Image (cartoon, rainbow, N blue to C red; front, side, top):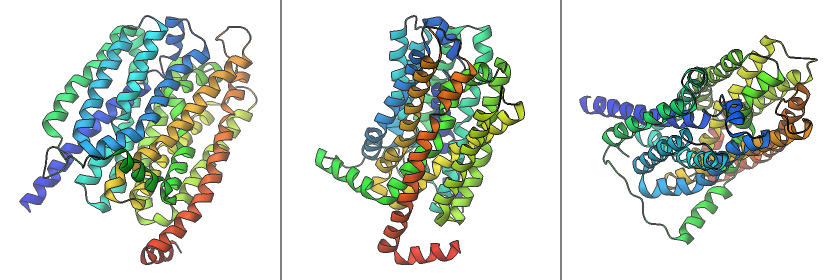
Length: 433
């Protein structure tokens, strides 16, 4: 009992430190959201140039997912996570001192590199340290608590920019990484039996075979499209365009816009554990649950975008709440990857799935910036509500693609489960009735 209790306490401590590193990554990822208007003035840039910050950050993040998954399978979570925390600290320090647009772009690219090296590591630690029955809920809790980083990047950073200025605000943010790197090196172990776990060296051919096997499984593809369809709306609002949309498009004050973005994060945190519990007891209905959530997001956005004049505050509050639920809904995709792949492919399969939502977010960030510039006369950054309605409507293209693919691959994933494990298929289908 003592040994089991000690392991439980050790697992909790490892998870807490890893979670804090993930929260730091979310903070750095989201810190530009409330600084978007300040950045246009500091660097004298247009909407599409502002979108380039987030575009490059998301592009790097998405591109790094598979390489990071391979690195985690090879070198272990502890090493990769510590490296990511150091990279984030250096990148945010560089962003604090950035005076030119090109310097700031380079700093955000490096932020994307460090950010990419966190979440997969934390998921691997959860799968290693906790019992399988606890993993879905723990992954959801990890995802939603990590969003505390976005809360810190919303209201407090809004205050910091107003009182401390650009450089001091970002330097204080960067300094948090030093503390967490030390805590990570002292506390985090890859597994209860070893501080560092190393996988076998993989040849290029073995890497290609592993990725091919992961991607060919319809469960991985279903998880990919679930992540694609649910995440982008909340991500784009939280990372860049939510604050300008609420201020310029809906006429809210900066303070109210910051509060609404915080409400969105609270919605993410409140619904994550509930969704984790739900998919644990009803795994057969994971894709059905996701389709229902996407439908609610689409309907709510449709009401807001069709409203004559600025939408009322209650409707915008509903919008950020419903959109926020898409965040933990995207994490359901990782559960598909977990149950569809063997342990030695877990990190690389997770990397494949984690690309999806960020590729969709990247596409939307670019599209919104281009459409805003197209619908705004001259070189003005005084975007109109009409311009924002045009820009935000691009989401329907991505929703349509994602919904079709989810419907397509959920049938294939169920057929594959029936072929590979008839007993599990029969048990889940009976429980679903």
